[in-house]
Length: 241
Image (cartoon, rainbow, N blue to C red; front, side, top):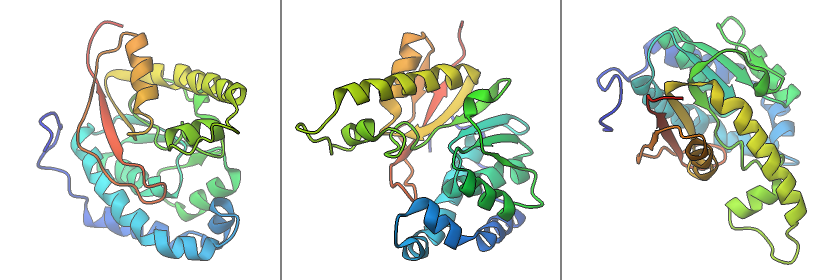
């Protein structure tokens, strides 16, 4: 158990929260999600991933519950199906406010329909527009998204073809990634918690180092359901801005 968790003995989710998560997943339109996530084979994809999204999501939600204070604010960049257990946990179990963003409008419609009656809404807009400060920032499998950043993704996962790799396109992607970090990371308070994948840590720690923000990357990793990248937590420590 990491020594710097806030609530080491209070991490199990309430029964009503787990039931709410199950209810949300039972209401999802998997036919529509199949078209969003897959060019073909969407039904088989969700048959394989539906349960994993719930079980792995609950494990991550329990880890977050140990680390976050009640009644705080979280900013989710790229909130999709895999993030649903976390969004439900933060709002129902911890009385926290979540602002969740996703640029795929069709997925947002499906998520919000399934979450009807819960105190959360996913917004089909850019997370850079979020206002105020947050004590938790979720940015997982965003900076290496093959749809948004194909050249960066190829480098991150060791798939870059030295013959066909486009360094000019990569430089454009790198600028967009840095612009995203410049817009979102200053919204995170200190102390604060940042949730990301091990493949994205380099981008984030580079930004924190350049901006002289003290941080600690936790060693414990958590498997994720869809992309499969291990999740980790970065704790921003108090200090002068």
